[in-house]
Image (cartoon, rainbow, N blue to C red; front, side):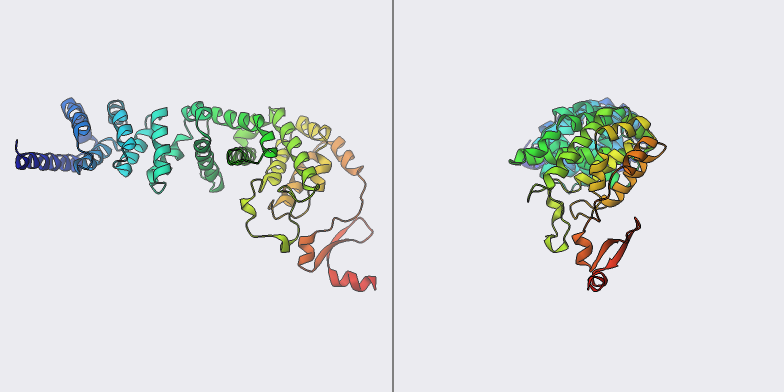
Length: 388
């Protein structure tokens, strides 16, 4: 054929696929087209022969997206025949939006394989504005296969998975996290607590980000009934969390470092969230407190691990750890519930004075003991006048 005939033939094929795209919007039509194996076979062959800049490729991908929409049986058939084709299209940076849509709709029915997940990682790096990439990872974290493959992912890809899950928790989106997911997250947290003390390279900072996310996720899960019982069976979680908190608290008192509490508003730079350990102490206290909820064995372990005095000492405002006071109070409450030994232990601690809070003082107020074991919030000026 000459060039004019070739162009006319291509235009005809484009119009045919446009018609097919517009027709396959209901199940009966989808089933009929999918049964015509010659159509799918021709489509696969034609895609592989298309010029990279041919507009027909986009229309074919739109046709396939409509074909599998809300039709599990057809989705499985298309996934089986075209998954390798979609991967090559993404590798060549073609029709990224349409390719992402196809992989996402397939994942609604067929658990994604490593190839599909890698394709979506590539898309996230090339264009993280494609909503289907976000939708895909939202679905991906609910499959066992995601967590089976998790340890084989690169560091930056692990962060994508964990940030997706953490965002679900923050937005309180109902999601199903399989047992394997919880096990993988807990295992990752238990294996790498020492990374916090090796923050000197970009890779180490990424690893710190991972462990921080793991801790935040576990802490959040420990507030959910369906997860807390499973977490309470693992004593190593509390032991590891206690060891980290003790070390963080000790380091925070040893000079100017990232673990040092910010208790004076004038010292706050407004970018505390950039601190690699932002919120970690609060998360650790939340986790420890939740693990001790109505669990005598964990309550006793917390006392034996000598974590109770540390949590009491953490009960001060800190811009690096929002709501840390509230989590401390909650943890102490859980330590003491139906546990006379812990109640006696705390009662035996000696008061050494009132903790001075620079944050409160910056507002012109402070905590003051009245000599009767009671604390009050009073204006600083009133104390000065009293002293005079």
